[in-house]
Amino acid sequence: MYMDELLGPKKSLGQHWLTDSRTLESIANLADIQSTDTILEIGPGLGYLSEVLLRQAENVVAVELDSSLAESMNKTFAKQSKLSVVNQDIRRYDLTKLPKSYKVVANIPYYLTSYLIRLFSQTANPPSIAVLLVQREVAERLAAPPGKLSLLGVTAQIYWDISLGLIVPPSMFTPPPKVNSQVVKLSRKPTTNLPAGREREFFKTVKIGFSQKRKTLANSLTAGFRLSKTDVNDLIIASGLAVQVRPQQLSIDDWFKLAANIQKLLGK
Image (tube, helix red, strand yellow):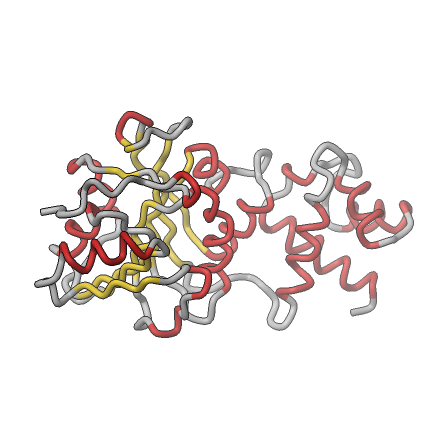
């Protein structure tokens, strides 16, 4: 079916193609695709995953940066009316073009993972579900419990319920990456506890909190907000935390309390 299989993956675009049918089916099934769903696929390559998605969804929008691969997709699926191939950088694609409650299913370039998590989290038109094949280490960071949280993990868990799926070894890809991959499912939460109009201030607090990972939270906040050590220690205690706590030890609720107390201290 794949007329342009001789097109080689490009290292510069982070292309690693997955062709194992059982793994592709597992990825698609995790998205709970209905016959009325519109699916956004990012970096479809030669269309191995696209073919699976087209059997289940009403429409598939495949956004492909590589013009030669986009052309190949159009040739391969020329008779498939349910597929729209968009030759564009996903970072420039307008998500508001998609219907509400669309889903994302994709084997994404690793270098785009953090960007895409933030994009889908904070866009005005978020997907209801995103099933992504990412680096295993990143998947674990997304689903990490307090004690192992990171800036990426906090951001993701504010907006999504996160579950981990199949681990995919390098041998399943062409070319093989240097690390294991893992499927991660993000299910959109109906609401977040972000205070209205305070999203920017909240994430500023989290970003500053994680800015010096090997230091205590108090040190990072003191430097980042240019506050006195005494004031920072007081607000950490007022948030129900130990003065020597490190940022990765906080829960999501801890971050909410801390951010609110910082805003009070700053008089905002």
